[in-house]
Structure formats: C-alpha cells, structure tokens
Length: 140
Image (cartoon, rainbow, N blue to C red):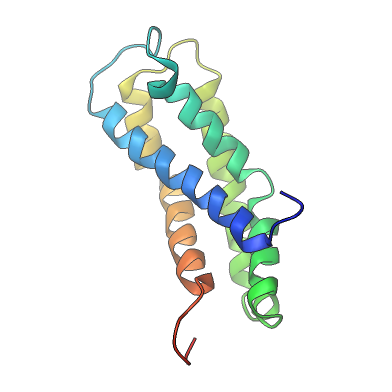
C-alpha cells in the first residue's frame, strides 16, 4: 500500500466497510443462531474482520486522503474528522465485541446493524467518499 496514493488505499477501506455492512444486512435476515459451518467466503466473521481491519487508523487515512485531494481540506474539516475518529473507534469496538462471541447469530448482527454507532460511521463514510471523489469537468 505504500506505493499507491492515499485515496486508493482509503477507497479499499470504504469498500471493505460497505461490503461488510451489505453482507451483515443479509445475514441478519437469515435467522441463524450460529456462524459455524458457513463457507469461508460467506462467513460473517470474515466480513466483520475485514471491517475491523479497515477501521484501524480510519480517520488518519481519511485525513491523508483529504490532504492528498486538497491541502486545505483537513483543516476545513478538522471537527468532522475528529468525529469520524470517534465513530470509527466506537464502531470498531462494537465489531470486536461481536467477534468475541463463540457463536454469531443473526440477532446480534441485526442489533449491530441497528447500532447508531455503525450508522454514524456509514454516514461519515458516505460524506467523505463523496467529498473526496475525483470530479470530471472544471468544478469540484
């Protein structure tokens, strides 16, 4: 990851979070009592672990990506980036709590999906992703 730009690395983090959340929504609807026996590519733990890893240093990656896009953005959005850091750490902690369970059933995943902390993080992701996307045309 060191040879690529900050935005490309940040995009990969966003993709892991969004893919994880989409999988969690489907998993919660299955009414499962355990995650045991699921194929590795369809195992809720793998998606949660990918999300947990993507959230490690998430706010710093967001700031680096913003700075790469426009040097003024980190200062202009300083309070927002501080909120992103808090949201990412709280969501990551909730994910770690779920991962610590012997069995991950649909009910705990449904509760995680409904968590205001995870929803705040997703909203942060959508705002940052839209604000940092390269624009075509003259205006940004």
